[in-house]
Length: 113
Length: 113
Image (cartoon, rainbow over the protein chains, first blue to last red):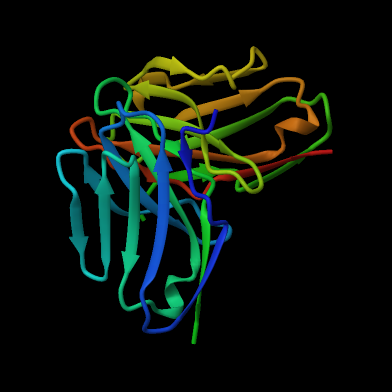
């Protein structure tokens, strides 16, 4: 039972354009969501997060949008840069209990120069 | 460097052998997590420690797996009688109790021949 889904395994975007990565979840109890970036041979690196009490959080070129009614979140990267090329994972958690993460399967982003 | 460290980075073993991995969390982080990532998947939760107490174990953690966190500092993950299906990247993460963001180590890649 995949509680967090990233249905696009890969995405290619031209440098300078917007990258939009999508994530869907099934458990309405999740109340905290995060995006991580992962380069080969490294552990995931925290990018941005959002609480379920918000619908948008912005940090520089990165913005996360949350649509609770649709159980959907997205990560926007504007403008995209070649250094953004990596695998992006969305994760969901409950802020009660252990705070363990449930990860999606990842989207490989390639930003073309 | 004050990030999460893991040792070894790579481990190749023969089926049936025992292996042990070590994780050193960020100093003063009281929460410690182990995840496992296989090819094409996102990290999957294995177990969670708050200080020295192991508070949750995933059903993925069979009786061949054991984890400890003596004195609430570093942690070890041992796999007994390894099987080829245990081949994966084993990730450790730590966080402070009052924050939700987890910081991941570089992982230990296990290959069981």
